[in-house]
Amino acid sequence: MEIKTVDINSIFIDPSNARKHPQKNMDAIKGSISKFQQVEPLVVQKSKKIIIGGNGRYQAMKELGFKEVQIVEVDLTDTQACLLYTSPSPRDRTRSRMPSSA
Image 1 (cartoon, rainbow, N blue to C red):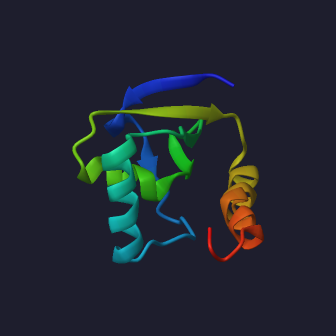
Image 2: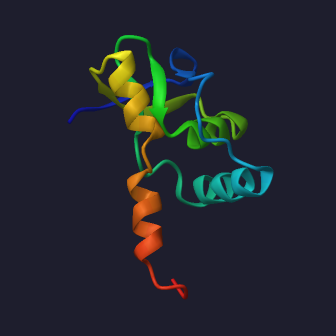
């Protein structure tokens, strides 16, 4: 897996993204990125430069004034990309197993 640094304006949010972040979540994402910077690359469909993983982080980084972001490009068809980002994210599955005090 190759991580690339690209201009933030060279990749795009998928307008059909199923996951929407309420303002409270966006504030938390922005706070985390402000404190720790970008610690995980965005996942981008190689053929279309559309973000299929990390739309909320992308939006937060854009609002914070980032000029460049780290990405991983995946070579997926539109159908594969749709299946990937509409499945529960690994982070969601991990959280469901975490103790409530975590």
